[in-house]
Image (cartoon, rainbow, N blue to C red; front, side, top):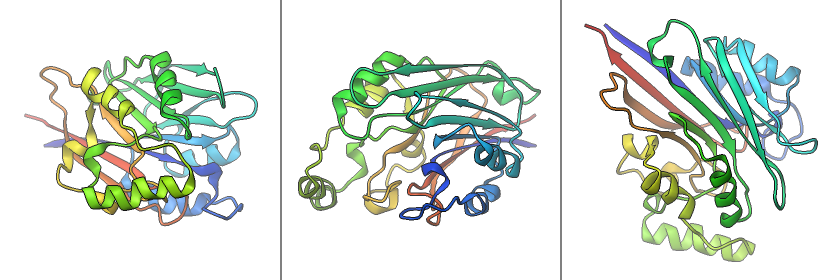
Length: 257
């Protein structure tokens, strides 16, 4: 007998599709519902009726929000299982405030026992700012999710990297590509990049999670010794323009004797 636990993260983009200010819950539900999620971590929401309707439509009736400040949007976590405890941490030094929402779940599902979850949305302009934010949060979390606004070098062939990453950023006068943040999380802190773990060969446009053809949304796992739960799937799911990001989806499986 196989038991599963399914999670996803996505930048909701204030419940509006790209270039359209209409609220768009129906489209989000249509792409998220088939995933049969046990937990959803989101960015760019408010603690309002739109968030509640999305959670309830997905049968994720336990949900929380973590606000950044009065002016910036919140992160959220919705769960099929009760939320045992949670906390929200806010960092603001320069630019917009950013938040880090973490929780532990209750219930009888063995995956959630003594396992912590967190979501964050880091700065979209500057790698040094992102590094300051993540270092302030100092995640000590089993599963870290969110829109990191950060790149991973192994995601791109050299041709794609030069044409679709370097050149695009030069033309738009954005910061030059850097990989400090993802290197910090994986190489120094020892987290595993779930998508890379499950898809070692995929590159270029097939890994994109945002409109600019790059992967900036992640699910990170902290390895646990003798963990009976194994990552069996991690994929990027097309949001079908329900939002300006694609969904990162992961499935864990435990074989029962």
